[in-house]
Each structure stands twice: as structure tokens, then as C-alpha cells.
Length: 224
Image (cartoon, rainbow, N blue to C red):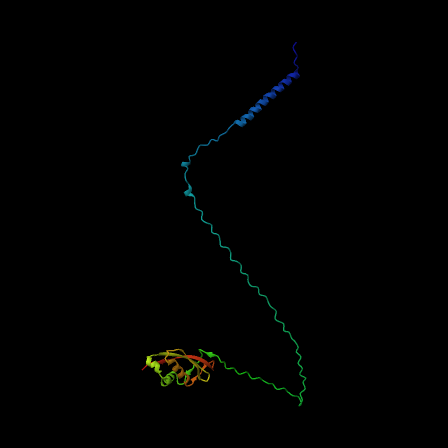
């Protein structure tokens, strides 16, 4: 016994068929969209044939920057100083002094300045050096007349210079005579004797006043 198809059942069968066909078409379109590859129609370029246009590039001149402006000089600010105020102070002076015949006025006593003590210092160099009366020529003439050649030195044939040190005092007298470098054989003692008996010298001066001065002179012994 055949079953009867109703219009409603036929409609349901067709609807399912259409859904299946639509689903298959959708899957095909999606698959084709992912699998399709497109390539740009570009020709290969040979890098060896590319023309070099670097020589045509223009050099860009350096940009000159203007120098920075000079710093501003700050002018000194002049501040006015007010004039000093004068302070007037009243000084009271008592001039009401009575002077009678019996009033005694004290005498003003001025103490004299102490005399400058003469120093006992012995100088080596002074402003005015001591010198013999009549000069050094007169002194050596005195030595030549009064010097006695020692007999021992004459027998031994000793000659040379004896350096004698002495001090000229403030009055011109000669003291502290001694031979500091001699030749012996009695010559040193004879040179000291002649100096000790020499006449007074002109004393040396320092700042205008006489001072003691130490000196050294050579006395020559020579056989004639």
C-alpha cells in the first residue's frame, strides 16, 4: 500500500536540499578564496644595467649659522649716597678761673733728650774708612824708617809679607795689633811692634760719628 505524499512533506524535502546545496557552494567559495594566489606582473630588473646617477647629485653647501649675539653688558648702577650728617656736640669749657697774686703757676719742665751712647761695636766697613795722617804714602814711609830686619830672617834669607790686623779707635789710636799671617823668623813680631808704635790715624766714621774699625795691612820684608 503506497503512502501518500502531502504537500507539506514535499516542501520540507526541498528546503533541506537547498540548504545542503548552499552549504556546499559556501565551502567551495571559502576554499577557493584561501587557495588562490595572485602574482604581480613585474619584470625582473638587472642590477648591473641600472644607470649610476650619483654624479648628478648636487652638493648641498653648508649652512652658515650667524654668530650668537654678544652678551649684554650690565651697566653699573650708581647709588646716590646722602651727605654725611654733621654731628654738632656742645663742648663745655669752664673759663671761670680766678687768678690772684698768690696763685702759683707750675713751671713746665722739659726733659733733655738722652745723649746717644757711643757704641763699642767694631766695624769692618764704614762710610768713611780710617786713614793715616798724611795718607798711606806717609804711613809706609814711617814703616820703612822704623822697621828693623830681624837678624835671624836675614841669615836665613827669609822674605815675604806679614799681614797685620789692628783696630783704629774713635780717637785714632791703634790697638789690638796681631799678625794673622806671617813668615816667622822674628818678622811677625817686628811688624806688630811697628804698628803698635805708629802715630794716630784719622778715625773712621759711620753716619757722621767716629766709630771703631778693624783693618788688615801687609808689611813687606825684602832683603836689599
